[in-house]
Length: 82
Image 1 (cartoon, rainbow, N blue to C red):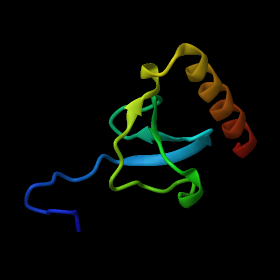
Image 2 (tube, rainbow, N blue to C red):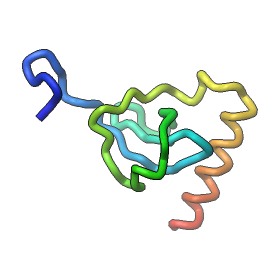
Image 3 (cartoon, one colour):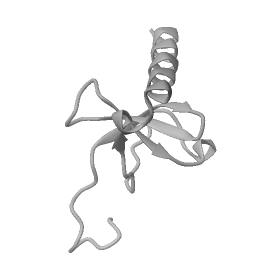
Image 4 (cartoon, rainbow, N blue to C red):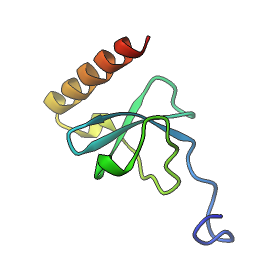
């Protein structure tokens, strides 16, 4: 159930795909191939998890240096899983 089922829309279909510093990195089904983030304590989440209360933001909102770090980290982790 959602917090207030009458006033809430279904949560964004997201998937935790990586952790980088204090950020959780997610993919959203509506934006394939584009990375999103949420600042949070990553120790309480697992890869592949769907975050019902997520408030994902596109990584493009971050400074360019941080975007590049996240992309490098994600690509490295993704390469290890293949």
